[in-house]
Length: 209
Image (cartoon, rainbow, N blue to C red):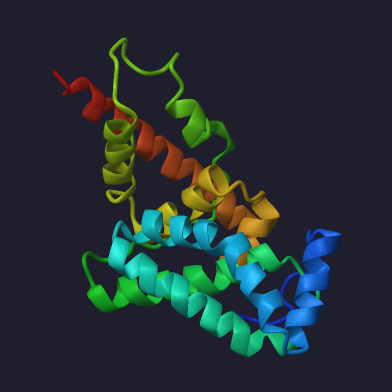
């Protein structure tokens, strides 16, 4: 597996922070706990959802969410006006990789960086659109469970990139920064992940009564 880059302060070249968020970050860097707590409130659901979808474990996601904000608080004085969302997500994603390696639930496969443009598959939302699902009624929670089970059948590298791009709405550059890999690798993994998800979901939905 290609090693995840360690969380790098100032690794993000462009800021997508809102003016209000920039003020909160500046205040938090000066020791304002209320400002930092507001940042936590703004991002805790996003970070939790990222962790729970990558690991499929509520308890681990809780721990990672708490540790992400603790790490962010400790490193915040060194944060240099990049995308705060990407910075937090990189901390959380690195933590997910650490947990994954520690648990050793299954080996992580390396991905090739070759161009897969000819294999382009639709985003996850498109795969789950009503036009591509069988003509059956699925409860929302049942569909969510099927999707999570499908995600857990991907290797860790594929899972992380499809969650960042298709569920967290990162663009390719942002996802590359979060994962510490080239954009070409993001595209390659995403194409493979979408293809694999399409195969898994098709089998899962076909097996429903």
